[in-house]
Amino acid sequence: MTKPTVYMFHGFTSFADDHWFPWLEDQVEHQLKIPFKKLNFPDSYHPDVASWDRYCDQTIQAADNITLVGHSLGCIQVLHYLQAHAIKNINVLLVSGFDEPVWTIPELNSFTKHPVDYSEILPKIRRATVISAINDPSVPYSYTLTMARRLHAKFVLMPTGHHFTDMGDDKELPIAFTELKTLLTSI
Image 1 (cartoon, rainbow, N blue to C red):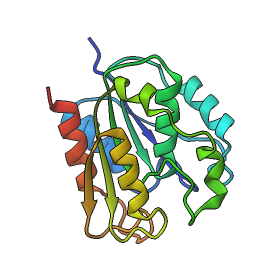
Image 2: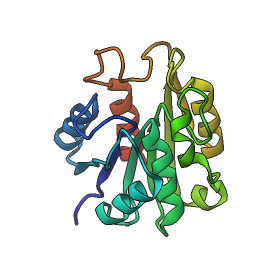
Image 3: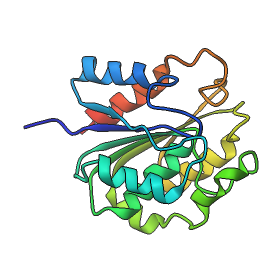
Image 4: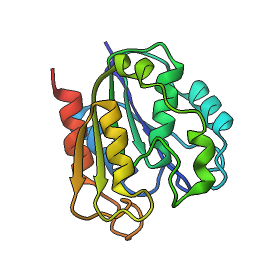
């Protein structure tokens, strides 16, 4: 029996091999022996909802027991994917995300034009954890906290970290691995 895959959803102006994503892949595959697939969405500098949805449908095997990890814009994309597919027992880890228009990045409002229907998503989730930093200038933590509450998720607020991308010290994110490990190994 193969182990369920972890899928990593990057964000706005990012790519699969940016930031802490390769490090997390290495940790999951070598320590936990679980396949980790980093998605590489089309045109992350000019993201299009329909293109990103189509990419997910073509790239992710819609199966029960998978784990979805999102960063920033990737978080709302995780929620779109969950809402669109009849899957269950899904683990979710979201970092610096949002599910409503964010005043700091209005160019992403198309991703929040249609509110997430949590009544459809919540029954599909096994466990969820959401992480933010108190000093995030891109997605203020209050947006991430609101999303965590709607998901009934564990919320981890880091005292620093910015957007977990913009300080140059973003090649590792130990809190993400710690929380992901808990999601993947808890009964």
